[in-house]
Structure formats: C-alpha cells, structure tokens
Amino acid sequence: MANHGKVEEYDSQEEWSQYIERLEFYFEANGVDDEDKQRAILLSVCGSKTYKLIRNLITPNKPSEKTFAELVELVQQHQHPKPSAIVQRFKFNTRFRKPGESIASNVAELRSLSEHCDFKSTLEEMLRDRLVCGINDEQIQRRLLAESSLDFKKAMKIATSMETACSKECTRFDTSDGQCKYND
Image 1: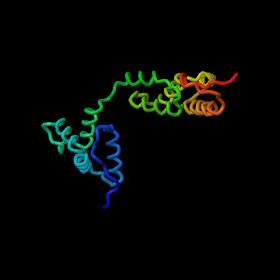
Image 2: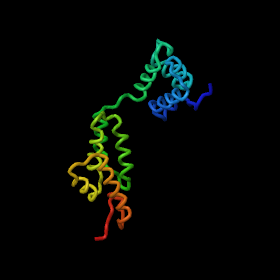
Image 3: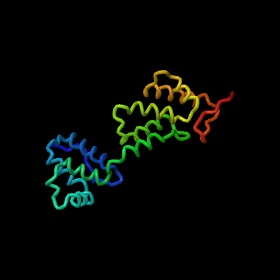
Image 4: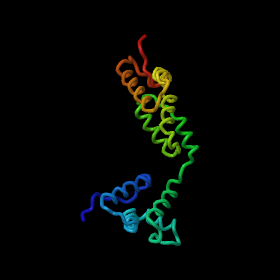
C-alpha cells in the first residue's frame, strides 16, 4: 500500500493541535484506524524533542502504556493549557477594527479570538455584536443599528457592501480612524 502524504516532526512554532489535525488527516488518507498504530506513528514521527517530552511527562510509565488520545492530550495540556474563557472573552470583547483593516479581516480575527470563549450557540450573536460595536465607521455603524432584526450574516453583508461602496465613493480614507471622508 502506498502512503499518501507525509508528516514531519513536530516543530514547536506550530500549535500542537494543528500538528495533530494534520496527523489525523494523514491517518485518514492512509486508512490508519488502529489506535496502537496511530500511537506508533505519532511516536515515530514527532521528533526526538517531542518524544523526550512525552517520556518525561509520563515517567515512570512508558509511551506504549498510553493510548494515542492520552498522549495527545498530555502534550496539549503541557504545551497549551486551556486558556481562561473569561480572559479570552475579554480579548474578544475589546477587539476593535484597526485603521485600514477590512471588515472581512476584522471578522476573521474575531473568529480566531472566539476559539476559546466557549460561546457555543451564541457565537453568531457575539460576532454580530462585536462587528456592530467595533466597526469604527459611523456611517456603517448607524446603518447596522437601524436594522430592526439583524443577524450576523445580514450584518456582514451590509457592512462589506458599504465598505466596498465607500472604497469607490470616498474621496479620502483617513488611516488614523479607519473611516472614509466624503466631500459634502
């Protein structure tokens, strides 16, 4: 059986969870369903530094005595302990659109910040609220606030449409406040 793709050793510049996601795609592409085999592949491709870390974290046990999932969780907790939801929500709720930043880029950053906020089913509402509150363009913000029933999808559509129109109609974009300036 031919192998599809390859997995490099873990580089601490990459998030452990992303490395494991890539490894799981490798398993899927190559039909590796057996957890013992998954553990063996992880331990053989992770690199000497990561292997040593795993051994140190489970001593006096041996890596072969733990499941793939247990090893993954062990390194995850060591490398990136679960952040406080309150701290992450603070970062999310204090994020404003930066001068010159597109609405799409701002929303992408908000989505990234929301990862550990534990919003669950309220994520779309929270994104809508941050979009409206952090837009830093009075004209777009007023238009969004004028909507009686505004969901995230509609807010994005209105804001990005107005941003596109602004970029075509405005006479000067003020990078200090991120707003279009119009000739009256």
